[in-house]
Image 1: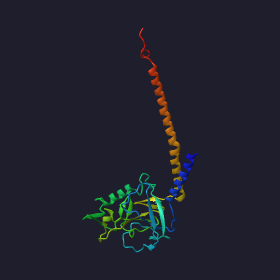
Image 2: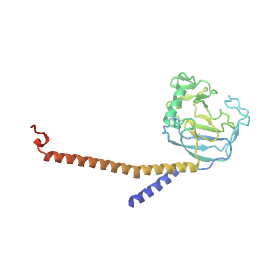
Image 3: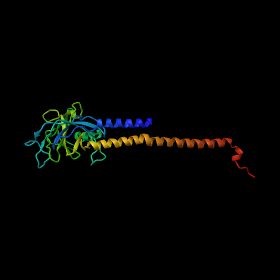
Image 4: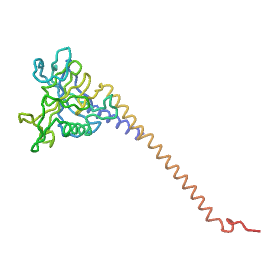
Length: 269
């Protein structure tokens, strides 16, 4: 009975702590928004890592830009958000890449390789610094464009979410990237489709509050099922088998000690 109560209390505490780390806050009603990742470019996180995102309250038209437009759409291209709000996301795998975890250190390493590779041609290395070859040309990584500033990409109906990764100036690679005019690059921006969230240098599909809560409940139930049902049964079975083998061996040894040698060897007539 005491063990049962401890299990129930532990499960409730697990559910509460899990929801404290879950999704919080509502979404803006506008179709386009900016999600800024406060994690630096040198940050390393696991497949199930989490990151904070801040929704900008600014609203600014994007018409009349002189830079190269990567996306095109029939509707107006602009960024807007209804109010300041925070979002807390789980880094979860994309549906089209079930075996590639987003927001992970492996994902960041792949992006670094695509950016700083000599064959890529995005950067020119001089005297320990990296200079952008063409600031208007986006970085193409996994069929997705990445821009050197949040001012460059134009948001459309198809890609209304802009993700911005702030660069840590102490990073030995990202922190040494400079524009053509000699100023240091401070951010890397990339677009995501509607319904997607920013996950490191990738886009991932977010889950609703109740779906996330259901996953936490199922995970907790499976965890306690393994710890308090499956594991005890396995331990008891192992102990029973070991005891049975010990009794068998002990019985055989006792019979061997009582048996005389001439009883084991048949006498010839």
